[in-house]
Image (cartoon, rainbow, N blue to C red):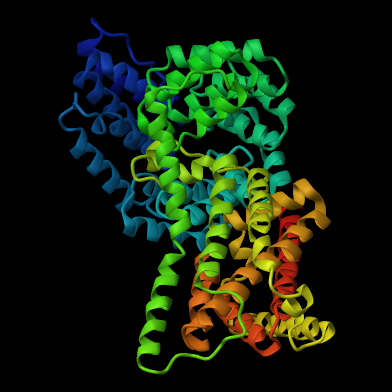
Length: 615
């Protein structure tokens, strides 16, 4: 009771001069967490007089309750409210903040957990983030709430520097606190890794209080991408209508579209486009696709015009204009549409001409060898450099065409005038699986003309029997993978979870089942890639340069076809051994068997790792 009386007297002394013009501070102030927000609102009205009075109230609290660390931290947060303003209303706020933080760090409570956490919260300096990381072993004796807070802060500090590390911290925070503020960071990483069931459960089990700190609309979008329309709609319906959240209308429009409520979805889309000050290009693309699929001809044309009026970068490859043409052939073309079509033709030619990076040096090296009388002798090949160019170009073009049709955002991101400004979103696993499927099918069709000239059996087996080719191919693949694991030549396959290639395999398993995935991964892909690289390209190059140089050239091209930089050393050695098998056997069955066994093992590892993650 005496403490409360002392506090009240101090407050009266400090606040007396301003009682006539401002409401009095509660004689028994509440110094609980977030009290700084309430006091900040008051100071905005009374400026520095109340600012000093509130500091005095905090100081009085500290004098009477020196063990109350949270009120001392709240004092610093209160000062932050003014120190971080662009136009500072309180001139001394920066100096006050420095003094407040220094007092915490050097005072008797400097080793208090809450003080340590506030130190992490209040600094973005590299050295302070490193010190915060050193707190992790010490945090094992902290409460779950305190540990979760530490991992939340570390996730935020690393979000833009190291996304994978930030996501790891976010997942650790979520394991301790289902309502953590970095819930979506953890969920996005789980989805990327293929742990979709775990991501869905995390969103569904999050307490209602989570959505005060995390985006409800972003969570609903994740649920929609996972195919859980009902859960997304339920999450959005539970939102407080008096507190509108950015992106909520878009998320609800997606949910309504998925349930077939097109009129209601259209209204939400149009309200967003009309009322939002800034509309992302991805939103205009989404609305156009909605009208193209579910609207009238007039609505689709209007939506496309709104998108295209943003400029050439909005549809620089004419992807959306061509989709409009396919669904509404009668829509008149404009001159500006021709520019996108010409850019598309140019991009296609670039992909088709890329093989010349390998073809031209081999050609001129061959000319130099012939001029010096050292031309290689390899006359049995029916494939020349023209066929090598065609084969490599066919593979590149098939991938380009499938990506253009199903995941155009990936191509837009490669264009210098679009880049990150295009609002590109990663494709889902199922879309990436479709890209893989159709690129393989188109590539196989384009390569069929190259199979003329020799019987299929001779091309496959050469001088080896079928049994010998398969067994040696499997043995070489197994040996290479075994040695790789022994010397840790690459990051283990779990480290590659999250790459687009791995996600396409996960999507294939989800969409086509285990057998469909293996048919695509361990049968069709090895046949196509071995035909192109160890068949056409290696044989054509051997007519112009030595076998060693030809093998290195095709191996380099093979490696550059893959995205995972971690596995490039393995892939290069793999391609060299496959080329050696093709030479020794005189056919393609041995390298195909080697490739198929390797892909089969990779597929099993990915499916197994995904299953473990979802437990």
